[in-house]
Structures are given as C-alpha cells and as structure tokens.
Image (tube, rainbow over all chains, first blue to last red; front, side, top):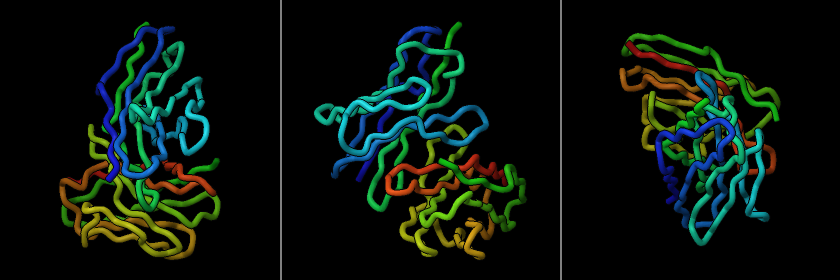
Amino acid sequence: AQSVTQLGSHVSVSEGALVLLRCNYSSSVPPYLFWYVQYPNQGLQLLLKYTTGATLVKGINGFEAEFKKSETSFHLTKPSAHMSDAAEYFCAVSAENDKIIFGKGTRLHILP
Amino acid sequence: EPEVTQTPSHQVTQMGQEVILRCVPISNHLYFYWYRQILGQKVEFLVSFYNNEISEKSEIFDDQFSVERPDGSNFTLKIRSTKLEDSAMYFCARKGAGSYEQYFGPGTRLTVT
C-alpha cells in the first residue's frame, strides 16, 4: 500500500526566505509523486510531478522538488517566498489503478 | 491543460435527502475520479471511473454512493440518503493524457443539515 507523510501541519516563513515543505512516502512499487496546492476556497492545482527520469523536477510559480529514493522523500522547495504562496500544500503518491493518495497537507504562512 | 467544471459550487441539503453532484469535462476524457475532503482533513479517494465503468472504489464508497455518466458527457456522483458526516468538499478529477497526474475541478461544497 502507498502512503504519504507530511511533516508539519503549519509552516511559517518570512517573505523572501527559503520555503521547505517536507514529504516522505511509502510505496511498494516505483512511485509517481505530486505536489498540489490549494488556495483558500479553491480546488487543487498541480504544482509539479515526478514520474521517471530526472529526480529534480521544476513546477509552476518557482517551486521545485527532488525525488530521493534512498530517503523516500519528495520535499518541496522555493528559494524565495512570496506573499502569494500562502496556501495549503499537499504531497501525493499515485497508487495502483491510478488513484492518488494524499498527505494531510501543510499550510504555508508567509510573514511580511 | 483544461480541467473540469463542477456544479453546483455549494449544495445544502437535509439529512436523508438525495443529492447529485455533477462534473463536466471540458474535453473528452475516459478516466474520471471523485475525491472528498472533510473540513480540515486530507483529500480522500472515493471512486475511479473508466470507460463508463467503476474501476476502483474505496471503503468510503458504500451502497449510498453511485456514479454514472448518463449522457456521455456529465459525470455524476449521487448520494442516496445523505448523512451529517457526508458534509465535505467533493472534487472531480480527470486523468491527464498519457500520464499519471490528475487535474481537479473547483469542487462542490456539500453541507448536510
């Protein structure tokens, strides 16, 4: 079975500072990994994905994530936080038959 | 890539009533999914639908739930007799062409009173 663990339900960073949201996964087969973002009162938007190939993947809005098999991690980073990045971020893994398993989410707060 | 639209955006219903939530793909896709998110909790898989048949369903998706694509376009989720605990945000998703990611609609907020 697949599962995802997101460390920290809330993360606060100052505007301009590095954003690091942590995600660890468990999968019995090679995983497909995703980060989705949810802005207040909106749906889920795909930020980036890892399927195969390059382990450092770039997404929208300056975010990137690195797949580390040895650490079973897929942490999300952004070099410089912007106020507009305030949202909830979900790490997710694709399981058998394509269903997606989500983590519990991390709410990112940006401090002025 | 285009996503899907969902109607209504918000539905309020009384316990025991039937509700139908609709998902309208912008382009023709074969793979659809329903997820729900109870307030403050994580997004949970309900059911996947491929080529007009259920391909997988979760433990949450009991006999009170059903899905269909009645006219080859709209994709619906029906809850026959709603309970208070059905109150949640319901998301429809479609699978991207030739890949594993899914694209989500804006959701329907269901409130059961």
